[in-house]
Structures are given as structure tokens and as C-alpha cells.
Image 1 (cartoon, one colour):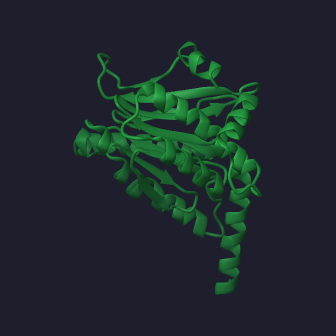
Image 2: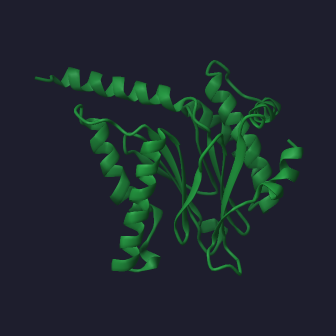
Length: 250
């Protein structure tokens, strides 16, 4: 029979196990810009950024099978909501709060169930940049909303350092070009901070140096939801040739 102490110790062990697994994950940076929202990550293989619904997109770090399960669950719920209610009722808050968070919370708290090894970032596009939203979803079901930008990384310190950099350098609503440049540097800062936990602050140059190193073995993936577009689908992945000018300036 489990005592309250055993239960708490089990949760701590599960949390530590998941945090260790997430530590090496490729951070994801989300930024709202003048004509949309973007999610940026580096990948070695497979996809990192996905469309969930007309105005929603998703990325995550962690176990690939768990990430895929979250993605499919989000898509299923969003399309059911759009069919039963209306497309305008499909929001990140409902997808995360009603569909995903309870499942993650239950799996994490049940000692007989394998927990999700994942941390996710969702983006929601609106007509004005000031209303764009980001939500982070943790392996234990906890979630939080953000405006303007959001970060998920291998450690809490990594996220905090990248967020401080973005807070200091994002003034007003950035252009696409400014947003991509800031997201690339923020990614490097987050990844470096996750690998060097004893460093109080990762400099901008150290972040760029880490990014340059990682570009030798990984590829940038950048997904956007565009506010003004002639295409039927607002979501698109930016082609590598369009990213090259940004990477040459790193």
C-alpha cells in the first residue's frame, strides 16, 4: 500500500526522470510578428512544427511518440470542436485546457501509467498582433498562456534566459525579419543554457556560437501562421532557401 510519502517520492522521481530526458531537447521559440506568428526550432530528422487547425500550430520537445500522440489528440479535438460548435470556438485554451492537460495530469499522477515525456508550445493567430497567444503545456499537465513570445527548452533556466533576451530585444511588434533573427539567437541561448546549467547568464554571442555549432548537424525549421495571405491555408513551413540569408548572419 502506498503511503502519502511514497506517492510524493514517486512523483518527484518521475519528474526528475522526465526533466533529464528533456534536457537535450531542441528548444522552440515562438514570436508574434506584424503579419503572423512563428515557431522556430532545429531538427535532426522528422518534423518539429505542425499545423493543428486554421489558426493554431504546435511544436514540442521530448519523446517522439509522446509528441505525436499530443499532436494527434490536439488535431482530433480541434476538428471535433470546429464541427460541433464552430471554427471560431477552436482555441488553444480549449485544446490545451480541456483535451490535453487532464490526460497529461492523469498519466503523470498515476504510478501504474507511463507519463508523457514532452513539453509543448502552441501558437494561436488573431487579426491583431496584440491578441496573438501562446500556451506552454508541461508533462505534468500544467499550462500557462503568454503574449508576444514564448519559449520551451530543456530546462527552466534555459527558458528563463531565452525569455529575458527576447524581453530585452523585442520592442513593439517586430517584422518577420526581426522576429526570425531574434528567434535564432534565443534558440542558441536556450540550448546553451540547458547544456551549461551552472552558468548564470548566457551571452548573446555565446548563444550564436552554440547555434553555429548546431547548424553543422541540424537544420532550422520555421513554421508560420500568416495574418494576411492570398493562400487558402495560413500555415506554411518556410523553405530553406528563404532561411539562408538569416543563417549567414548568425
